[in-house]
Length: 417
Image (cartoon, rainbow, N blue to C red; front, side):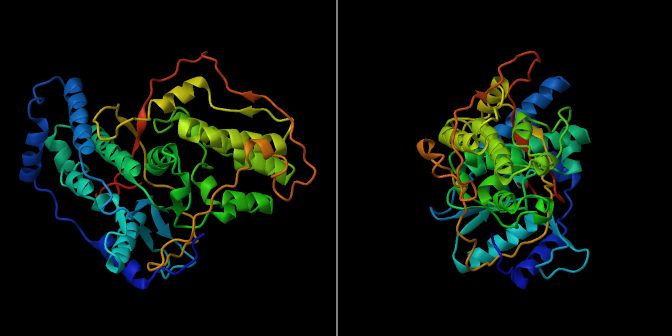
């Protein structure tokens, strides 16, 4: 966990960025941009026009350059904002949006070593998409879209670019947030893309975990929930399946803290956390098949009489539909709209010179040695074979596969994670 110091110059840079008011898009400029976007399709009926416009913007976003500027470049992702922070020199009640923190931190790092860090909105592709001003009401009017349809178009285009940005990420992925929120693109798109590409271990949270949420849990469980690997898979937010932002991944990664607190032993609590990780790993697909196996083996050690329930066949098919073999191609259905406003919870310090500390990974015992390699607080536990339940019922019709959610507008500054 990072516990260094965020230099005042980084905070001041973030404040300056947040205070900066971008020039308003003029009606004439909006119409000029819209002419190019509408060309050849503006005569179509409304429904078909909007579908073609979405497809055109997805193709544009898919073609943009979000490649790493150098082989060693790290990538930042952001969500929501910093406020009431106990370890940062901020004014009472001050809030800094994480997009500005990510940008300021990137600038500070790159002033030391060029191209050591990047953020989505600062990539060539992010700048190109930003020049279309899709969040601006003038642009929505010029495209003959109401507010809801205009925001949906912006979510779609930026979500496509965000997914490609995550797919191109190597080295460290620095997440400017305390935890993943299922209503944020960081959960639904970016962390998912990294995990399914076998890059779980490169995810590094720049803000410490929300320890106050875990206060009533066993110390071992608190430590587990604060680990980078668990934070990169699990969320603790309630959800409504009827909400437009809901996806099967929302359900798979949900950890109910009240149910967790009710479990009587650290072993049972650990097993419950690992079961959520196993569900997420299953949704992530073939790249994480070995993780699923290892997690299940450890759960068998921890709770021999417990049946592990993995996502349904329908949910796994939905997840498989998100995995594109070529993110440079424009294929794929539109994402659903989600918010970038993940929950911020205090406790971060970052050193602009040294960067983040080494990654912490979730230690998983090998399949053949699950019992002997169980954690030291589990003496005498013997592994027993237990069934794993994968529901295959089709009682309820399922929605067709959807692309991952797109991020939400944040002060017309572009996209966030």
